[in-house]
Image 1 (cartoon, rainbow over the protein chains, first blue to last red):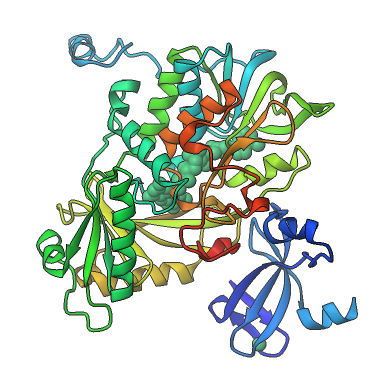
Image 2 (image 1 turned 90 degrees about the horizontal axis):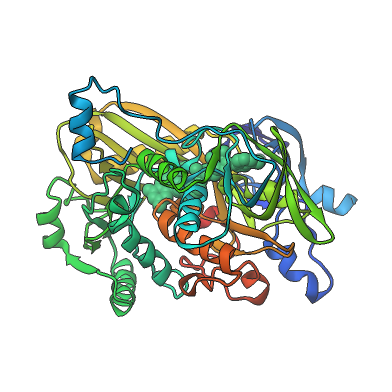
Length: 84
Length: 416
Ligand SMILES: Cc1cc2nc3c(=O)[nH]c(=O)nc-3n(C[C@H](O)[C@H](O)[C@H](O)COP(=O)(O)OP(=O)(O)OC[C@H]3O[C@@H](n4cnc5c(N)ncnc54)[C@H](O)[C@@H]3O)c2cc1C
Ligand SMILES: [Zn+2]
């Protein structure tokens, strides 16, 4: 599997560190914290997830099909967070 | 027909014509008292122990593929009970005890082989951790022996003991651990359950749960609706999909784990060994193939195949420990979808929907748990009370902070 880093181009997946579900938002209230930390949608199909490009230190938000590893849109996670 | 010397002899003189199918293939009835979803090792074991020990009426196991098509037929067959933490130790020890009597119980040769499991250590810190683990095991009545470097050399002399980077400093040995033929476990439990009247329905996928005012009343399947007094989920890597049918999320991610088999070789290794400095563990099957594996691929996956970086990592680790493997050819590799829980330990519990039960979160180690899991899950389904050795494997432990995290890495399934 190869992932496209917007800065470095398409790179081997070994250069990246997987950081899990990218759809979670840290809750403001304590009562929702356990859900945030532990509960996952774990979809069969498209999954939005973080990958850290360990080489250039950029966090990416990647959409990937968990059945085939086909890739959808890839964005720089920081920009997405600020923009939203 | 009961399998015995007499049945073998009878068939020997009658042209092998007296055998009957190991289990029936019935059409589903309209209603069962208990419907078990998932005909893997855990679902079938649950059916067997339910039918044997509890009087719950009619039972069905619904399997979307064929019996043995899931992880029960994909694992590397290792059994052991070398766990450290309360909640795991007693549970896995019950399971190991059940393995020891399994073949008589289910009248099926599962080739249970207590050839020992040796975990190698390569640093002083790792040895300290194994001393602690071994002591915890012995305090709980589980067998454990700490071997020093010379004892390891005498036990498995063919490894690389001159590796300057990963010196073998010793190992933790559980002699009662070993291997079991995984297909035979699935077939044996299926046959035993069938003989007690359980309907095993293959190629029947559950597509939905019917829930009426907070009570589950049946399952929608590719063979139509099947009513149920109780529904028990044992879908392993697909557990999150089943929970989603009840509108719930689980503390689980699905990840792929790969396994490898070499060409058949003369006997090379008569035990199970795990390399402590990299991701590699190995045993040898009775056909002669070296059966080995490593770590999960590390990202969510429902693909029953893995990617190449892990293949390379496993081969590198193999060469570091056992250079003699360099000229051995790989025959096959495959993958299975693991239900990786957030603390690395399993869940056997009731769900927030009435009459709905969950058995999940087995990670890469659920094969050894098969008998214990079935035994305790059957107890829970029949009595609505957790079995004493499984009463910490609760679904709500995550919210309460009562995690059972053997590795201490937190809510990162790809690190367990
Ligand atoms: C490569 C590999 C190596 C492993 N090595 C070991 C090892 O050495 N030791 C060890 O202890 N463990 C090991 N494991 C883990 C172990 O195999 C699993 O934890 C265990 O088999 C899971 O339980 P099961 O047997 O019930 O799963 P499965 O056999 O996967 O059973 C689940 C069943 O549910 C069915 N199902 C899912 N969804 C539906 C639906 N909607 N409707 C109907 N049926 C459905 C599936 O088809 C499947 O047959 C390994 C796993 C893998 C993949
Ligand atoms: Zn980059």
